[in-house]
Image (cartoon, each protein chain N blue to C red):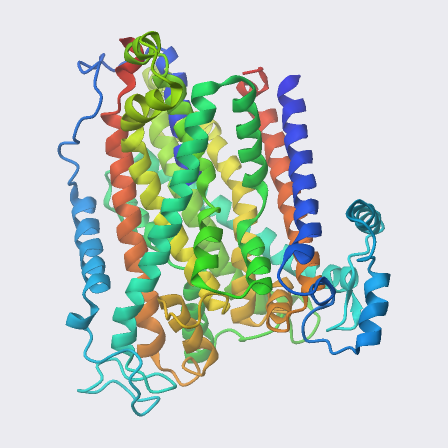
Length: 315
Length: 311
């Protein structure tokens, strides 16, 4: 099927592009590539710089460097962070689990909530509740994500003292983790939900005008029956596309929320790396994030092709 | 949200045209460019008013701001008669900062959206008009770039390069051209089958002339909402980047104000007058732009020049 082959080629091309960007970035940027590869705040003498230059292979021609880079990548060696004195891969793997947990749960809850509310609002768009919900969600999606996080942190943690204000857990048990993660997950879910709500609502409004819903009504099916048995399945197609796009968007949003809530995930890691100009860590983090998003997109595409047979036909 | 919705929109319309629906055929079947009547719905009116207010704030800041934004007074002051919103940590009047910050935020937003719309239009026009291999190549390129997460890329770039506004605007501009390109391409594919395009071809006009004077005016009504929505998303991205300290430090946008409020102790000292106003301003401005964009988009779909292929 040429459709799937085309998609696979596109994903592979994205992967190649990402690796190329990752490779050329430190070498193209202004300044000494050695500094770009080891980070700015590291003080080394001239002699050590020369050593590092040969070790990092900057004396060799570009294609050799690229093959070395690729082979390192396949061995899961993303360089060494001189700032934190550990190989980048280790640091990233450590922190990534938490971020994935937090982002995954938020995406899931947000998608469920948003789709449900969006379907209901799309079904009866004239009602006051639908309009109000629509307005509220529009406002939520226009706010910068960290602003909402700031406000909720202020209200619920500082003022009301209901939730702890930092960290992933006080004691490594599940109750504490839930307590700490509740607020960040809430904020992220509201974001994800607002995007899903708007898309689902538009989709349901479009699907309502189709002939099959008219036929279901003519058969005598009641309101919720039409909505939940027929329309939702067709209307959820854009939501799946959105889920894929959302994953990348939410990853970026999660960075800010982690900084605000002082959670020890990739967000704070990246922020410290920016402040300390720790370039190898930044590049490794970018690569990991890009690959995760690529993977999520692939999954969503596959899911979409499974659900909607129209896509499988060559265009 | 907006991109996915609009993305499915035109393709869904194409599918719907094949299955006969219950809607009556439209009388207007041939138009080049027509002014939209009646697009001042309720939301649109509010949006336009808000946007006008913010534009006024950006263009004539000295009329609204009591002081210059870099004049120093006593820092960390609470709101009072002389300083309606108090002062920040180095003593600047917050209200003046807010008013002058409108300029920067909106400039970055509009400029980045301009670049993104331009790139998207050119790529979409070329891909839709020439078709074939060029189309495949460009759409493949678009898909490939679509997947790369932009904000981490901008963060990495921002950490490498010296953060300045002339770096920020192009980089933000490269972020959101994909959906514009897609929509332009699908509209161009529709329009190039129209009679007037074919007759222009017969008369020997060059492709660039046809694209500019025949096809382009008919897609302006799609580009306008895309431009608006791109502005909204660029403003939010700029706010996010300023929060991390990656935008120009010499120019204080609303995002930078928020960043300073958070990192310089305004938050812990419960100075809501410092961090609430910029956040609210960002939200209102983005909302105004997004509402206008949405309004134009939904009204535009109704009066769109679909009849071009019936000619």
